[in-house]
Length: 327
View: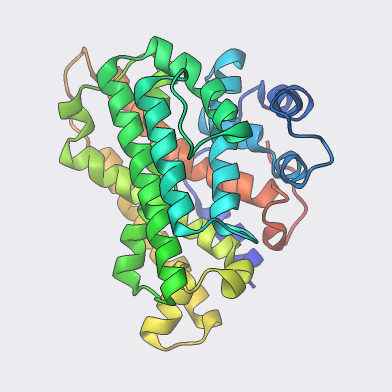
């Protein structure tokens, strides 16, 4: 049933699909060159998962206009986030103290640069983040680097809060879960990287404009809830209720199947709201309108990228209710 819902929502998505022409070549580089260079053998579990997941195709859908070199950097960063997600949420997941140490190590590197070591971030994870962060750190202004680091901190803080909930056996209600999911999705990390690709960072006043923030929140919800539908089968066993479908079922006291339908309707309503919000964005002046348009396209691409990648990636086999031929 969930697979059918996912394909139905894809057919209704008004955002056009996009894919970098370099995506498959960068995926080959990731699996054949980068991961072995990091000390991850091809027969290890993590590289096998990354190869099946198609991380570079996800990055290529998020940033279809990136150069091949930049798409490699972005793929390295997203690979880091996928490995962190697996470490924090998979079998034998990290404890809360370990997640906190990982957070502190990552932020130390992002703020101080790769020369400074930290016990919470070592080995392949450290080398991967150093590799992915090199070009954004070199090319982007200090205020952008700080904004990106803040987004990473928010994401890892959310990951810690979810882990703490699971340890305590605490299941969030819908409103609490929606707020927490905005942090754990890493969407807020992906948005500033649009500015890295275009070379046009937004001023803080524009970045924090209330309408643009609402669009960012709504786009985050759309990709997060779609992912929750795709991962429902796994999450029923492992998430401790951290899934919008499961939170809805518990709060409204309905069967999970009914909560799937309610979640799909909530997604449709939010998509309508997303379209309305984008149409209402005012002009910020000729010097900024192009950067704002790039940012809005990036938020929209993140939604559509998640939809299409979810249906083609082996990371979510339960989503494949139809043959996959997505370009």
